[in-house]
Image (cartoon, rainbow, N blue to C red; front, top):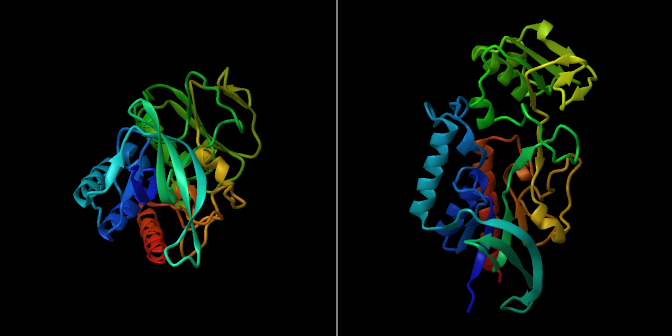
Length: 307
């Protein structure tokens, strides 16, 4: 007989890991699915020190991801890495034991160890986080020397003597401007339709290197407003990634993130929860992601206790 999991959690970033650990220690059987080969989400590719979390002094994102993997293993929660979820669909309604309320179950189809496997779940938790917004909406093309999004690919870039354009007005654009200049860029310019970055970051950038207002980008020639660059870095922020949940018809908020109930993290589909940056329920950071995992775990505990 195929195993029925109390919760299938999709995404092993901070929110998903927190939820899995809590559910396991509360006495439930969660399964944590992760498309990549490691636990930690964006933290696993973040070499910067965490300067914001009081208990993480001297720890980089990579260090924190290792700690998450260690705690996850200690909890005994089941984890499948290199396992990409293809679809999640609602199964037949399953009556509760007291016959007073229906409890939906779900089938999660996942590519695991070379084959497509259907997993039965009493609840589903979407914790797949975000992906960088593309240079052009809906685009999937890539161009030489055009980097989309922050992270490891920027850390590994050789900036020596290069002319660099950073597109975007958020914290990432201003932080990576400083990184590029520190690592030898001959010239760096920020192009932003508006400035959303913190004042402390903006104050460290020369005003003459910031261009505010509409601009035209040609990624094939690496030009911005007609000026040629060696490297373009596109930092337009983030968008939710949960294409596998299309069949669930989850409601989204005005910013395009999955809408949830404040107190439970439940989505518009009963029995499906969304946590972490895919839902943007709170200001996105590792602490709020951990907290989101706890909120969903406790909501699932209360729900399953009634079934």
